[in-house]
Image (tube, rainbow, N blue to C red; front, side):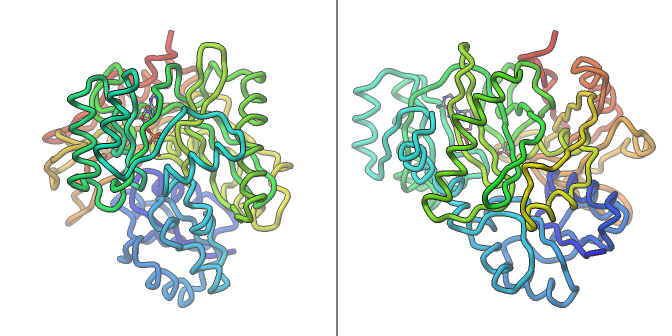
Length: 426
Ligand code: AMP
Ligand code: GLY
């Protein structure tokens, strides 16, 4: 039995904690810093160390005899958390900082894809606002403007007109809206199609595909408005048949893993390809993430029957491609409930009611994202607050179950999209 440290505080980390708590391989789980939901899971305890405090996490792990670290968010990976744990001799699941550049720098990812012949939208990168504006002027709109560095899913703007494009370029480069992360931008062609989150586990050389999922990135129904971290996701995605799956593996996943190895980059962790699938079933990479998706983790963990900890340990021992993974054949849907105003400014500290009415359900799990607890009262504590996740015999059933559960929860300023799954539901 091992002690596990889970780094992060969102819905993804709650889903990992919930899943790890069911593993016979696990003695104790520490979550740094966690949320009100992680603290309620069996075997789990929140610790007050921020995910950015890499030194603090390493010294805590030595003291508490941690046998495995699972890193949820991208920032600590980009900042070298795995490098630090590896040096300390502790298994940490997630790529070292070199591999995390696939997510940490869009310019790095784009040139990696160009070099290894991985399909993606054409692009140029800029650090000079005037040059970027000229490029916009000379090319057809819409174009997609992206901050090079990490911006919590908010550093992407689809420019439909010149005024918005120029304003965004000024905000990103001129005003450094995302600090150093937006001093450099890339501008790429707008792609049309269906989005797909394709996530695999990588052990350094081999990979294991996980269940497919689709996220809904924008705040508004019908996929309009500002980009968020993700407002809801479901799994599996019905349009992914065996043929498309093979194309994705052969054209995207395998060249990516081969390319990393050719470039001398050791990658052990979750590798997430955010894809656009066009009407001819050709995938193009929108982005790489070097970690699991949030909210994709929540429906995928609800469907995963295998032991997550055993799977991760296999990634350290090698041979993950032969892992006999077991999925619930049901469909799962997660609906994010956020604070009114997110992804811009919003209020927190609101009492959440109704959670107790769902606590005994086996087909519904409410994963916490931004919550905290004060005197046993659960309060909103972030932009994305909860992800209400439900199983069902098919997508429509999981949708009904999830939304019925959403209706049982309330707080002042509760917001959610009512159309999660709309692109594929009958
Ligand atoms: P990214 O962080 O690069 O995945 O971008 C966030 C979201 O913006 C994606 O999930 C898409 O919805 C949208 N997006 C990004 N790049 C493009 C593109 N080239 N064409 C169309 N939509 C895009
Ligand atoms: N849900 C998208 C992401 O985690 O990046």
